[in-house]
Amino acid sequence: MPGDSIDTVVDALRTESEAIEFIHVRHEEVATLSAAAYAKLTGKIGVALSIGGPGAIHMLNGMYDAKMDHVPMLVLAGQVTSDVKGTGFFQEVDLPALFEDVAVYNRSLESAASIPEILNEAIRTAYEQKGVAVLTVPNDVPLGEIEFALKDEPVIFEPSYPTIPEHDILEASKLINEAKKPVILAGVGTKHAKAELVTFSEHAEIPVVITLPAKGVIPDKHPNYLGNLGKIGTKPAYEAMQETDLLIMIGTDYPYADYLPKDVTCIQLEANPARIGKRYETTISLIGDAKEALIQLTANTERVTDRKFLKACQENMQTWEKWLKEDKAKTTNPIAPEALMAKINEIAEEDTIFSIDVGTATVWGTRYLELGHKNDFLVSAWLGTMGCGLPGAIAAKKHILNAK
Image 1 (cartoon, helix red, strand yellow):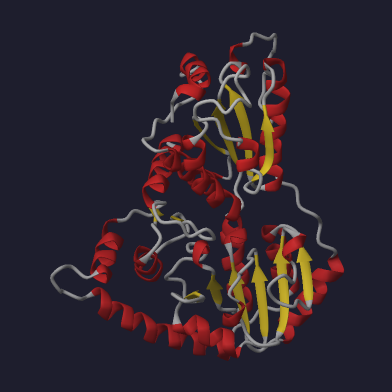
Image 2 (cartoon, rainbow, N blue to C red):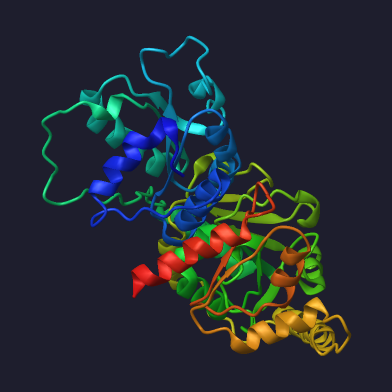
């Protein structure tokens, strides 16, 4: 969002308008929430800017959304000019101190010559640590002229994962083969492995429970799907968790331990080793890429064709779906939210992106919207901030236009 202390950056963007699209919003919080949503959708870094002082303060909510949902973001925050910095000038705030908790990279630019190196380092850090990189930009610094040549080809950041030892895969496969009532709890770490998740679930006949922000990693109408777990989860998901003898956690840092089973064997598949055993004691830890690990687990486990536990879960789910169908058929005036969700399901396309705000809208969207593999589900998952629906829609529209 333009303004006094960021105008030199905005003017520079105007001169490069054919290469860089500037999306003008009406509030700084919308800028950072939209940038966070764009990163959630694409895996690419989202960028937002505003003036310093009150504008920078307004950006904090969306910045925390990016931090807590672990997506890369670059924030350019304006600042008073260098000659009056530190004098208590109009709208001057100590921005590095303000951003200390939210940022994985937090630098104030001192000269034009330092911009290329610091900007490159900021972007790399945001990608590597999946967090917010902040550059505080005194309004006079971008006015400096330097000689700098861009590389012909941009550097594409590709995440790297450790290789999971074969003996760990074999140990996990053994536990899966021995289990009578296994359950998968799938999180956002499986979003890039949707097909592999379904293949593994079908191969071993294991029901799949999801975390709320992972809605869509397995189609809602898939027979092995039991819904999400938690306060607004499904009864079949909760009951399956209480009966399981093997919990398989994949790509999730699920925080509500009270909804997890008590003291059962657990396999945790996670790319970030810091999350292993954080919420639940693990028996086997698989640290690596969910997609590759699911392929290996499918190849090393026995094919199951008649799992009684899955059939019982499916029967429970049929009863649950009958209740939902009755809810969606309501004809009250004013219109019931459940009926509204049913109408949205009718007009939604196979690649529709659903941007869900926080509050009761989260309840209705999570429980009644029916997603397939080509749909996306956007929500402020860990921060849970209201007002994320419209910014998410802005990001979704831009993503769809770029894809086409």
